[in-house]
Length: 261
Image 1 (cartoon, helix red, strand yellow):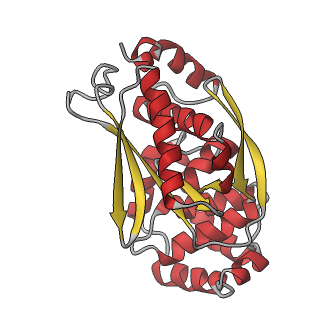
Image 2 (cartoon, rainbow, N blue to C red; image 1 turned 135 degrees about the vertical axis):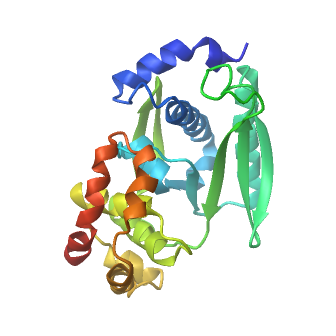
Image 3 (cartoon, rainbow, N blue to C red; image 1 turned 180 degrees about the vertical axis):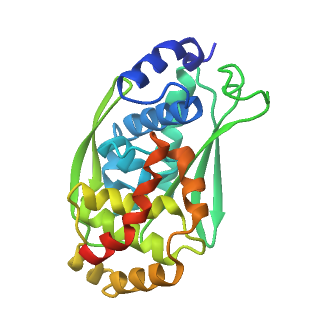
């Protein structure tokens, strides 16, 4: 039997102790698998050349109160082949522990990313009624950022403990603002994350922005906000990912945050 299925009750108990709502089982199982992946991944020496960033890094390392889906990394100095080897090594560990997984290498706009799918999991856990539905975790990385301020933060979830390399909160604020400005379609999670980062003490790293040719980023973000505002649909789209759905109200403070950054 899949180890996760046999250990599901204990996983749920651990999640509740960490403040996760018991009824959000899909988010819970995804977060467990993300945590296990990061634990195994950063146990590999070469993984120290990748900095864990993005919304899932904020969730697993900083406890931002929203679920996140993808695992994103800054590639500091490692080949695409080696990244693939590292991801494959983690999948080997999953399989040794009777956790079925399927690894696929994908390509989009000239760059590679990975998808790990977990079959025969959601239906046995009564999360889905579809026998064929697979939980998927996307793993992506970028070489586009430079001169990061790096630090380590502890992963402490579901019994997993590991020091993990990540960017500073000020760096992550710049990267989140960049995502807000340059995505083809605005994602309310970016707005929420920026507000949360500011509320926890993060500030706009002007040097990091300048080093990455984004000295006008704050200006661009302010202009976009003035043109677009906060649409009603943003709250509806964000709410399912929040630990407390009422926190969609934070979106309304985004304009004030931009003025203070």
